[in-house]
Amino acid sequence: MPQPLIERYREYIPLEPGDPIVSINEGSTPLVPAPRLSERIGANVFLKIEGANPTGSFKDRGMTVAVSRAKGRGAEAVICASTGNTAASAAAYAVRAGLTGAVIVPEGKIAIGKLAQALIHGARVIALEGNFDDALLIVRELAERHPIELVNSVNPYRIEGQKTAAFELIDELGGPPDALSIPVGNAGNVTAYWKGFQEWNTSPIMYGFQAAGSAPLVIGAPVAKPETIASAIRIGSPARWEEAMNAFNSSGGRVAAVTDEQILDAYSWLATNEAVFCEPSSAASVAGLLTHGLQTIDGMAKPETVVCVLTGHGLKDPDTALGTAPSVISCANSITAVEHAVFD
Ligand code: AN7
Image 1: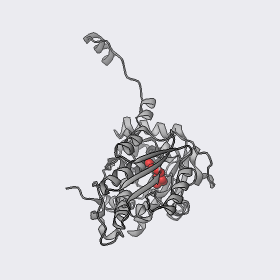
Image 2 (image 1 turned 90 degrees about the vertical axis):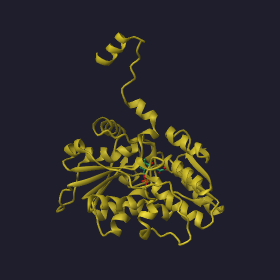
Image 3 (image 1 turned 180 degrees about the horizontal axis):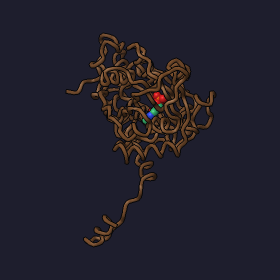
Image 4 (image 1 turned 180 degrees about the vertical axis):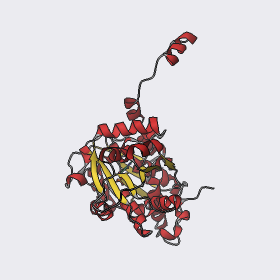
């Protein structure tokens, strides 16, 4: 039987004794070798398929813990700001816990699959005439004013759940990878991996990648109007800024930018070469390695084992897939027409 991650890593997760476990059997996601990518990068590269979580993204790891604690302390509702995946996950775990959920998303700027998820789970979905950063400021204030649990990654229980992905890597590889490559938006996930690695006294090199139009950590200042096709990481003012920079700096890694074109190239290349369909934001981790290589600071050995975190499933964003891939071939209803269509 698949095991909820809270049970798998119980002793490392600081829930209270009476808290229920609100779970949809998240975590324990596949770690897939990527032979062709390994060849291009010049290292042994693995893909951590976080799209295999119950709602199709890594957010479920944090949500199971945050919602379990919320339920344990008697909350009746949860709220978040989201570029889509947090909304989908919060909506699902709210159902599981018997709580009501409200999600605030930037109007017109979240992938259609994520919107469908939040709606079908019955969350109240509010499209804000503003971006993610505006939405996060508003929900932080609302959670102060009302008895509603904030489940964005500013909630420490989100980080406690998400750090288990680092534990799984150490378990499965028989030790930490030499380096981790990860897309960065609000910077919760890189913070979580680093915490997980540190708790097991390991320090892989942390490479973080932001979309060039939304790269505050690379520029060193917030971006007022972030833009990128990778809508999940269209974030201009990351909440976990210092923690993320600490992870990059103290691991000998770095944060760098990749253009939308580089992201989309990596996205289709992964689908056609490694048979892995992730969402565009996730492909930033691969685009970053392909663009910037495995850079190390002086005196540090070149990483041999590298994990790319593919944070969300490609089905979340069918519009980008259809806009990127070759077109469907229309065909008359006859064997010769099909023969031409298939073989010409
Ligand atoms: C697929 O759902 O911020 O650096 O509101 O959905 O921890 O923010 C999503 C972020 C990477 C960036 N990949 O992670 C949200 C949200 C995918 C994501 C990120 C997100 P963080």
